[in-house]
Amino acid sequence: MTLVDSHCHLDDKQFDGDREAAIERAFAAGIETLLAVGSGDGPPDLEAGIRLAERYEAFYATAGIHPHDARKADAASLRRLAELCSHPKVVALGEIGLDYHYDLSPRGTQRAIFTEQLRIARDTALPIVIHTREAWEDTLRVLEENWTGAAQGGIMHCFSEGPDEARRVLEMGFYVSFAGVVTFRKSAAIQQAARIVPLDRILIETDAPYLAPVPHRGKRNEPAFIQCTARKLAELRGEPVEVLAEAAAANFRRLCLQRKRGSE
Image (cartoon, rainbow, N blue to C red; front, side, top):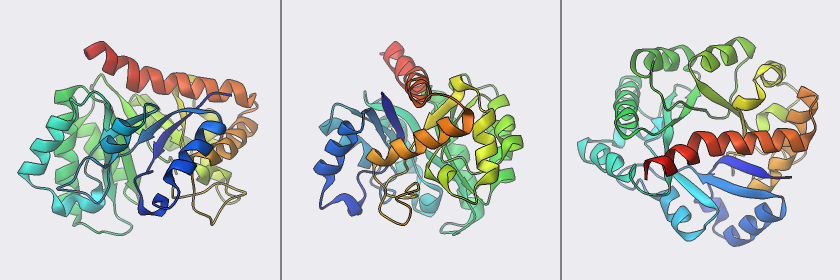
């Protein structure tokens, strides 16, 4: 079974003691490619994912300013982000968006930095990776105003809404990525969404070290646990897990790798 972890944070300090072992376990679990999401600690350092991707052949990276870190962003960090988009292993811009749960950055600042990053993604022809938490309508409003018509598409990371919301972002051209939350007992709406996303628009992720799937819930998540999420998704959809996993891997390659290679 071929798997792609389309969103993980292996740069996180929680992996400092066993990062190499966790990567080996990922390979043993059938993962062929991992996307290191480059949020890190935010500006001025935007290269957390790139450092992993430069070290490991199986890794690709994103670069972006997380909504938590929007207050740290300035003109210099936005210029640096635009420069990093040309790195050969950067295949998407993200994760970007809005987070009103923690409000670690003022909401107006979050929206402004989100909008600026959408501009950079359009200019550099990179797909985007969207983070949204308790900010669904504002996130969609910013996208509708600043992303409609963009040819490169993007990923709704760790999708946590229902089928109606899934249809809405599918109509906007997004791929929908499911994490361990889809395995949780009280995730009925997310599970309904997982059933209706077309096979050619679905992705699977871990968001490691966060949101470990059942039966690992409550533990530090790691890429090897993606098998649990893949199996639950396949069960919900009535598909062989091998078919689902290969389709998700092909979707990732089409969205993130073919376009990048075609531009080189």
